[in-house]
Structures are given as C-alpha cells and as structure tokens.
Image (cartoon, rainbow, N blue to C red; front, side, top):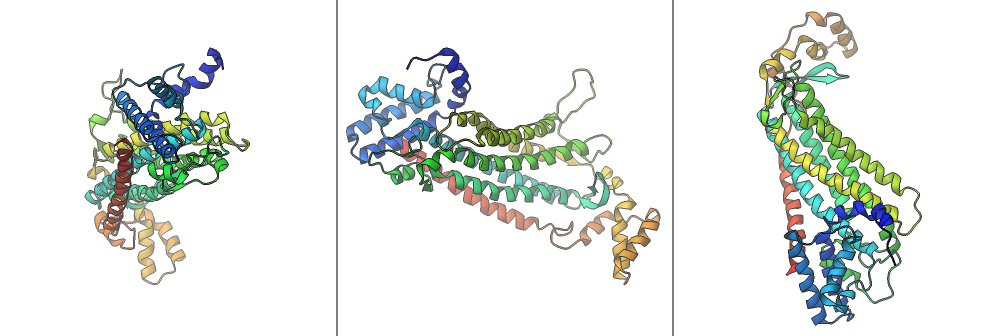
Length: 440
C-alpha cells in the first residue's frame, strides 16, 4: 500500500525513537519464534540457523549504533523483518509466519518492562538500604514531629529515615505483583484471534523465560493497558514516596529550619545570587512525580471504553509507559545519592525540640499516677507553657513499643531487605540466562 508522508509523520514519528529501545527485545522474540517454527516443521533446521545468525548480527549492529530505526521504517518489527528479507531473501519473509505485529509489540514491551523492573527493584532495595543505614547512624538524633505542618510530638532523625525504608520495602511487594502480572507470554495470540497453524505457545513462552502463557488470545491484546497500568501504579507509588522525601528535604534544608545540610555537589547555584545553594534536584523529583502520575492517568483515559480487539490507540500509551520506567529508575539513583550526602545539624535539631512537643508526654506521666487521660490532657493543656523540656535523647529511648523511637526494629527491616535482594538477584540471573541462551 502506498504511504502518505503526512499520515506517516502523524502516526509513526513519535514511535520511531521509542522503538529504538525495543530492538533487542524484538530480536529475542524473533529468535524464540523462529525456533518454534522449526520445531513445528514450518521451516527447516538450516533455515533456522541462517535466521538465527542474521538476527544475532542485528544485535551486534545495534550495540555498535549501526542498526537504527529511522523515519520511513514504520516500526521496529518492520525494520527487523526488512533486514532479514534483504539479507536472506524469501527465508527472511518467512519469519512473520504465525504472528502479527500486535503480539510482537506485546512481547517487546513485556520483556522491556521485565528488564526495567528488575533494574528498578534493585535500585529500590538499594535505596531502602541506604535509608536504613542513615537511620542507624542518626537513630537518636532528636527531631520535632509535625502534624498539620505544626510541631506535634518528639520524633527522631532515625524514625524519619526509617519511615522511608519501610515504605520502599512495601513497594517492593507491590512491584512484584505488577512484575508477575507482566510475566505472561502473549506470543502466538496473533492479531487477537490466534492463528490456524499448529504453533506451540508453551515452547516460545519457555524460550523467552515467561512464567506462563497468557491463554485467551483476545485478552492478550486488550490486557495491554491493564498490565501497563499495574506497572504504572507501582511506579506512581514509588514516586509518591520520593516526592514526600523531596518535600521534607526542601523544607528541612532551609535556613529557617536548618535541620539538614547536604553536600554542595548535588546542589546548584544562581545566575544572579552568589550565595545561593539550591537543592534543585528535589524540586525535579516533585515535578517528575507529577509526570509519572499523569502518564498513569493518560494510559487509563486513552484506553477507557475501547472495544475488544487491537486498537491503534494503544500506541499512544507506549511513550508514557517507557518514560515512567526511565524516570523512576533515575529518581531512585538520585535519592540514594542524596541520602548519603545528608548531615543532620544536631544543634538546630535540639533547639527545635521545644517544651510544647512534650505536652502529651507530661499527660502520660499523670496517667501513670492514676489520672484519667482526658483529665490529664486538660490539666496539661492549661499549664503546658510552663512545662520543662526533658532530656530529648533519654525521652526518645523510652518509647519502646514496636516502631517507637527507641525500638525502630531496623535490624528486622534490614534482614527482610537482604532476603528480597537475594530473590530479585535470582530473578535477574534467570532473565540474563534466558537472553544468553537465545543468543548462544
């Protein structure tokens, strides 16, 4: 069919850049598919060897920057098939037997997502571990706790840091749910309605290292936004944790608070004010959080109400999906770099722990003397301005319930993170072994 440059530019230009990140995954899918075609007797062993050799050539060219999707190539799938046809003639034209670009793009994106999520979960665990180390180091540094942006009760730098560690640990679990959902092979579903050839979908699924075959061929196609949204929800949650950290850092490093100092290497200056030391990177974290949340919403709204079957609207979600994974990976690395640069200002922290923070503590002293809590509460409310400040560190160590400032259970969190790290390192090894096997 004759192409129209205006239409091509409108429909495919944005995807060209994105598809350059999918070249390897399209080759991996083609290697598994070609092996299945040979197993089913659709191509011969010699033909498989030629296809495999040429597909591996594409990998080599790509890594040298010599296999690039450009305007006019339409997409990565067409580029790869055209290369095979140019090199192998009619044999290259056989590679598309029993598959559609629809199931190809699903395979590419799911394998891309697996690789990105494996890197993200590694960074997530690493960042959580940095927070634990930070919390251990400054466990009993006193710090005001806030509610409604007003001083509330005594807290500690350790409690603050550990709160992020525990949140990120929970998000590892959320990411695993999305990872498992994504870990299903759609190859062989064709254009949503299967094929009439005797293909072996279990074979290609195992070749590509998927945990299972996604059975219903129609659902394979319409699950594209479902699976992407599950991943994006996990990405949004990670960014929300990062945004909370960013908001705290921007507040606590102001001269008015002065709770923390950070290394100048992660700060920027001003073009007009020589004295400025701006923590711009945390402002970018806040802004990029909005981008990831917007990408999640964009994916949901683009695909809401679409009829069953493949719809080209799906293509508009690719950029949002891939961008979000990249942002999250970069953000976690930024967080790790920031955590290790923080130096708490003990003098400022202690100065900020004023008498009003201990009002509830004084009410509890009365409770231990037999006074009903509400009576004690009202008594202290009338007199708290005259209350004395206890030793802040001694006070922190008195809160010994699970999760209190004197019993953060950092060792338990660290132990859990180590176990999760081992699990995900094994998953990464399996993924890398699958790729190595495909290319060997």
